[in-house]
Length: 144
Image 1 (cartoon, rainbow, N blue to C red):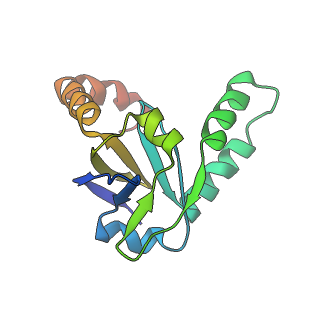
Image 2: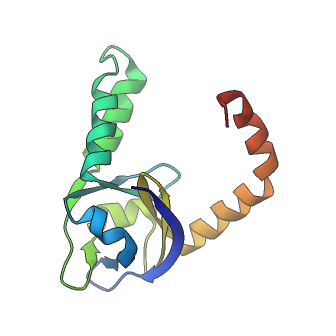
Image 3: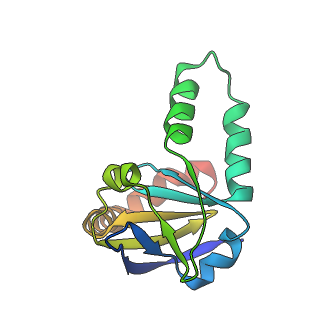
C-alpha cells in the first residue's frame, strides 16, 4: 500500500472532507487521524498506525523527547470512519490545529495521507520546490 498524489477538496460546514476514492479502500478497514507535523493532519491506515505505535512504544520512557512525541501524536488521535459519500468527519480541534477552513489539499505520502489547508500547502510546496536539490543532497548520507 502506497498513497501518492495531490487532491483538492472542500470541507463542508459540518467539518466533513471527501477522501479521494483511490485511498478509501485501504482506509475502510480502519484508520486514525491525528495531528501531523508542519501544522497538517496525518491520516493512517490501521496497519500503518499500529506500526507507528509499536515504534513509539519501543522508545525509552526515560527519554523526554520520546514521551513528548508520544503525547503529541496520541493525544490528538481519533479513529475515523466514512459516511456513504466517502467523507470523513474532522473534529473541530484538529481543524483548528491545521487551520482548515473550507479549501483543503489531500496529499499521499507513502504510508500516510496528509491533509493541509490549501494556503499552507502552497507555501510548503513552494518552499520544498525551491530547496529540492539542497534537500536531496542532505539526504544522500541517509542512502537516498
